[in-house]
Image 1 (cartoon, helix red, strand yellow):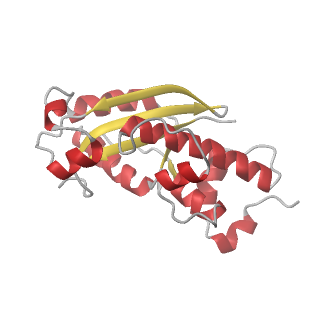
Image 2 (tube, rainbow, N blue to C red; image 1 turned 120 degrees about the vertical axis):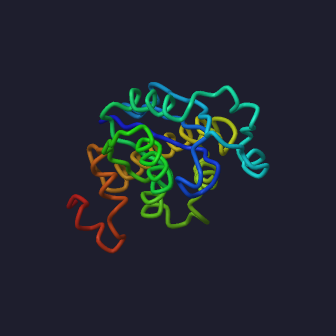
Length: 199
């Protein structure tokens, strides 16, 4: 089974540039297990609103002495290397990752799969596809407080491992690679039969 890194950002809001990242975490998944972890707060150079502080538990006091965004991103990229990424609602995390990388003067192309899109295609009975809902629905390990980067990354990793196992069993596949999961998440439900093995 190939490797991937599950990533999660906590931010001051929804719009990169107008908003900034305040925490990032990444967990390495290899052979169906979490093998390594990275986490850091990021000083956004601005104050965090009371709403975000309440939502994430990350306060201005905690960020005061945190590494700069550029230093945090440099360390993150060193951890990631060339390993492909996974995130829950990946379009959000990828926008912030791309923005924060750009602020360092670099441009890095990293493939990122979306666990939310994969979940939509295999869990028809889920009431919604929020991370907390899916973790509770499948009785996965709750790693810590939701809306903290490391806990969310670890729980997304648990969900990703579970989905790979479920796809492998449902479609009788000997192995489910990252590339297959990436394509599976991007393929409309009506066309999934085109990428699935013939049984």
